[in-house]
Length: 71
Image (cartoon, rainbow, N blue to C red):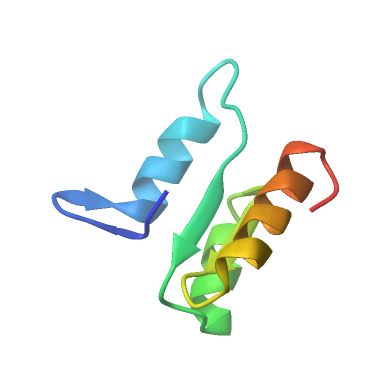
């Protein structure tokens, strides 16, 4: 999930996904790394928050950790 999607509010989309019977894992990948933004998504009980500036190998590692439940 990217935070800034055209025509969609990322917070609202995450809230809707979390209401599904089986929402799956939700990871935010964003250029925003401000504590305020991260706290807003963490309040929705997301599974991970990754800055777009991380290296590709680190991104894959973090996504694997989320999928394994060790985020």
